[in-house]
Image 1 (spheres, rainbow, N blue to C red):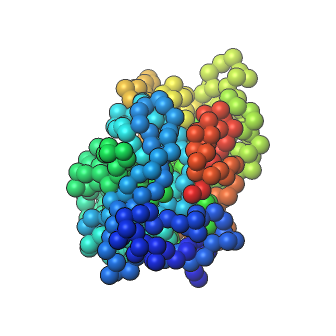
Image 2: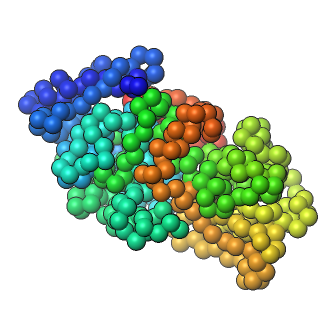
Image 3: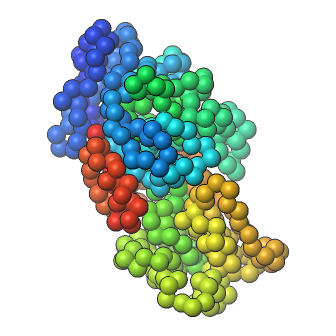
Length: 419
């Protein structure tokens, strides 16, 4: 089945290779499932070229993003250039923009929850071809490093060093703006209409998938869902506590429900989130503001000794401790999902661990990305998991700063930006 998210751009691409102008035309401004036709890209004989397009550039930490015209260089060997159709805004983007990220490099093009169409590929690329529908991946899967070969982890290290430096594997950037090199972000940079990623950082998905929905599987939804299913391995009949009811927390709740948890307790200071948590499977919700005693003591009392599994989905080290101490003695498992600010440290009394509790973390929900993302998309397409329900706002890409404001004020779960 051909994707309604694609449209032929071969003619325009060929013209721009000789004129140096942008291949993007008004017909290529992808917006909805109903009015989009087949998009195809450069054929093998077409000379690859620099593309000019719009992107949201973070020139410095703590400042709003600026919509700019950027130049996107052709993909080099084992690289893929993608036309991004839709991208979502995640707290990790805001974390780096705030200046708290120790790996934050500026100026940079942020964004890591995106979906699009392969525009062109570099030499040696065999996993995808022009015209394929794909999701960029911030955790790659080379299939060769010791991390990829170990079933216990998904943390491929093949390009970790350069990715952390905001660069492609060869140590350079594919983005320039006003004569300045612009850094990449998490190997994806989906806040650009075109982006370049390593070929081990892209997953081919089914063409019929709605890109303004499945883009969320690039991070938050997959992370929370997998934290329950892969990292904690929640068991049927268990009791779970989820701290933080944003997108990731809701995805954890969804995963706990799928795993067969009997009791799922949502915790958040914002009670307006409780009804949505119930829709995803929370059996009850509580707010720390309603109690005089620490929330972990409340949970221990409510559950006759503590929960079987807890999940911290905020990135607050104090809440991480509370989540651990809410776990049952002897077998309770607490999973850290949220990312704390640089320099923060977690503390607890060693006796909490000596008496049988387990403290562990997760990244991208433990999914081996290239293998797992297509399966997650198929699961969504088969209506076996929620994704649409996370999207509270659909906005034009130029409203990206509004999307950040909606997130900061707690008025959105996920805002999706469409080019």
